[in-house]
Length: 509
Image 1 (cartoon, helix red, strand yellow):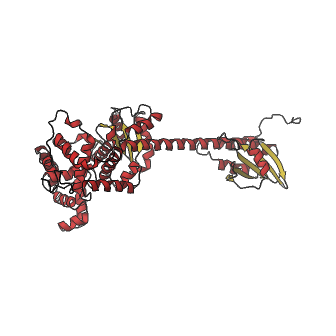
Image 2 (cartoon, rainbow, N blue to C red; image 1 turned 90 degrees about the vertical axis):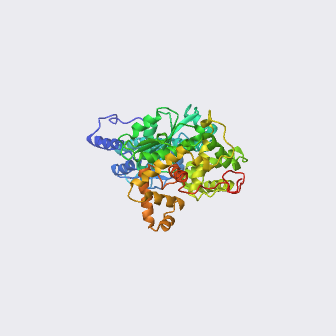
Image 3 (cartoon, rainbow, N blue to C red; image 1 turned 30 degrees about the horizontal axis):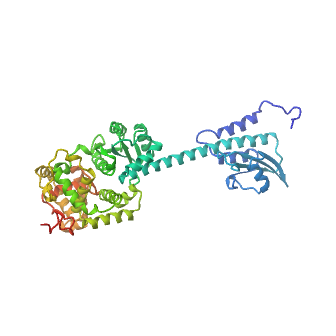
C-alpha cells in the first residue's frame, strides 16, 4: 500500500534515537536475553507482551488469549504479521523465524494495548521482533554447541571405556570418524591431570589445546578433579608438564608407554604417579621414575607363576575372560564404585565380575596380601611376554615364595621400609599391623593397644615418607604389601586353595 504524502522516510527524532539505542543495548554481551527485550518492549509501547514458541508455550511475558486460527497462520509463515482489533484490545502478532528450518517452528510475538498502534509503536514492535530473532538464534546456537561438546565428550569416554576392556578394534573404529589416525598406533601413554574440580572443564580444554589434537582427553567419570589424557605422541608428557608448571594446585601423573590393550594398566600407573607428584616440587611424576618390585623378580618365573594362578580363567570365552580380568584389575586398583564409573557399568556388575574371579581363583580379596598378590598376577598377565626376550625357559612349578626371595627384591624392600625408622613414631609397626588387619584401623588399633586415630595418623604419616598413597587401595599400597611379604613381616598368602596342582596351594606336592 502506498504511503500518504509526507509519510516518506524522515530523519529520526530524538525520541527515535532513545528507543533505538535502548533496543540495541540488548545486543551487548551479557545483556542478551529475549525476556529482557520483551520486558523492555512492554514498557516502551505501554502494552502487554507475550513471546511464545510454535507449540504455544510462553517463553517470556504474559499469556494472552488469541484466536487459534490466526496464530496458526502466522506461526506457519503464511503471513508474517497481523494487526487486529479484538474488542477494546489492539493486537500485533509478528512471526519470529526460528533457527529450526522445519515448518511451523517459528515463535510468535504478541503485543496487546488499549490504544491503536501509531507509527512509532509499530516500528518498535517490528524492530524488537528482529532483535528477539537474533537472540533466539544465538541461544539455539549456544545450545547446539553445548550438545555437540557433550556428545563429543561422551564419545571420548566411550572410546576410553573400550580401551579399558582391551577392545582396541572397536575403540579405533569409533575414534576414526572424528579423530582420524589418533589410535592408529600400537602404544600410547596415559596421563592424569588433577586440578580444582570446579575448574575441570577449563583444565580439560587446556589439555585439548596443548596436545594439539594428538590425544584422547576425557573428564574422569570417577574423580571430579581428574582429566585423563591418552596420547601416542612422544612429546605429550612435555606438553602437559608445561601446563602444570607454575600452576598451583595442579598435578600430573604419567604412565610408561604401554600397548593400547594395556590402557587400564597404564591408567593405574598414571594414578600411582599422580600420588608421587603431590610430593614433588615440579608437581609432576612418571611411573617409570621409581623401581617397582615386579621389575626385580625373575621374568620367566614371574610369568610362569602368573599363568598358573590365572589358569582357571583360561577355559572361559576370550571376550568373557578379558572382561573379567580388566574389571578385576581396575577393581583392585580403585574402589568398585570408581571402577564402575570408569568402565561405564554398574557397581553391582563390577562386584559380580570380581566375585566370579575371586571364586575361580579360590581367593579372598578382603585380605590385603591376597589382593596385592592377585594384582601382581593380573598385571603380569596384562604385560604379556615382552620381558621374556632372551630369558631362559621358565622353571615348572614357580612359586610366590621363590619370587619374593630374590636378593634384588629383598634389598629394595629393606630400602623402602627402612625409611620409616627415621620417624620417632613406630610407623613401620603400625603399618604392618594395619595391613595385617586388612586396612581396618579399628582392628589394627585393638591389636596394638592404641586408639584408631593413632593408627590412621601413622598410616597417613607414612605416605610422604614412602612417596606412596596407602589409604587409597591401589598399586602404591600393594607394593608396600609386597615389601612386607619379601621381608617376612607378613605371611605369604595362598591363592587357589581348591587347586592342589597350583604351586602355591597348601596341599601342593
